[in-house]
Figure 1 (cartoon, rainbow, N blue to C red):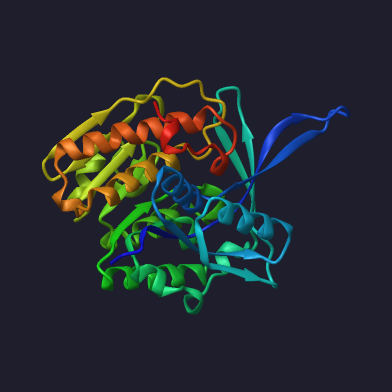
Figure 2: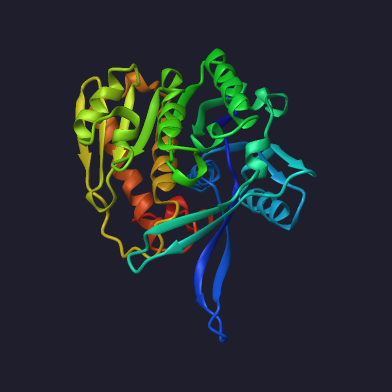
Length: 314
């Protein structure tokens, strides 16, 4: 019996989010816990699932804060390594008047890039229905090797493998390397979520419908493309459904895609179905629910802190 709904490998970090100006006119940043895999897991846990993280933080104030945050959220931290030799990764997040973000990272190296395959707790992977991964763990060794080791373990354990390739240009040496890196694990993937800004990076196609079809043709069972205020599409072997975004006043879009993914994976785990068994009605319901989760998130500051509990969804 699988004890977890979702186990994720990847970054947990501090989002230092723009928080106005001081009396002296200096920029203020707010310490927010984040990192895409950690955001997804918090969403799953708050909705009523069971989640665990495999990752690494530094032995510093930020690492302690992040571990305490996950423990408060009841996300299992048995796979979260503390390393004395590296600093916890920081992402400075600036927001424009629409709540849209730009990033600057302190990650040369950051703790998340230093996870080794020997530190991957495969018993967590063996015990989960869904194994989830992003692309930031593919930018540098040894985390890249640890990611492939975990993917092989998940495949052997019969897990559903989920992928959300968040593109952060500044973390790759070039766009060409990013494209190769982000596509390198597609052969493992059962469920993928990309944004409409990432379609060409993953498929060479700008159109969301063409891109989703191209990914399905590579063997992926469920392809999700999120489109911000235009909602999302989901493609399976049976066709495509469209789901409208919920009406929301965006304050901070940090974590919006992760909220969507957390909602979708929660529903998938709860269904007890394999991705190839899902009907179009199933994925329609999952996407509509996920848009509610995402809509709640963007109306609040931060990522982990902005994820809804199930009873908060309308």
